[in-house]
Length: 246
Image (cartoon, rainbow, N blue to C red; front, side, top):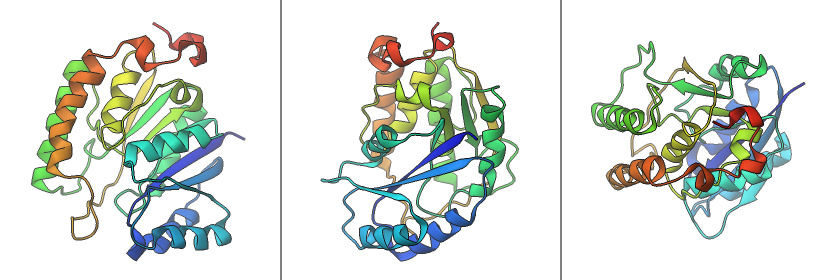
């Protein structure tokens, strides 16, 4: 049976973290799962909650010190992952894990190397105006610079073949990781699927972390990773599957 490694970056999610973990553990996927929670030096009791929940559910907890950002936490999780496929799951209720089996199907069937879950593809969900237009603008710019068309570049739900993802030389420490992943996958001959998912946006009062500063930084990342980073800077070619090389 294929194995899916799920990386969950955590930073100051204490109030609903245990509830979120219980929800994630109740979800059912058609593959073996490896859960890797990476605490990014939370200043609240998130780490204690993780260790308490790990005793019940048997998942891996990694402590990242000092605080480095979501991207750094994801990279640390990728290094630890041992599955055939790797995905990222936020430690909140914005994404529905029940969507994951449908996203996994093209990978399990050998039809895709990467699958994106789109919050905007055939979606009836009402989005917050500011975040909607920022996401759409950044996705449009990513499409123009990368040469691949997706409807939701910033989505958390991206599932990769492990050999493709582990060959990447990722360096983003914060939210630029989403742009970097898309820019790099566009540099090789990868089969990319995009399928609709549910989305339940939370507010800053509910713990949303991304800010306008990350939006400005995203413009730099779009240019840096799409236009200023070569294939050899983006990938270790010796680790890439032969069919992925252009």
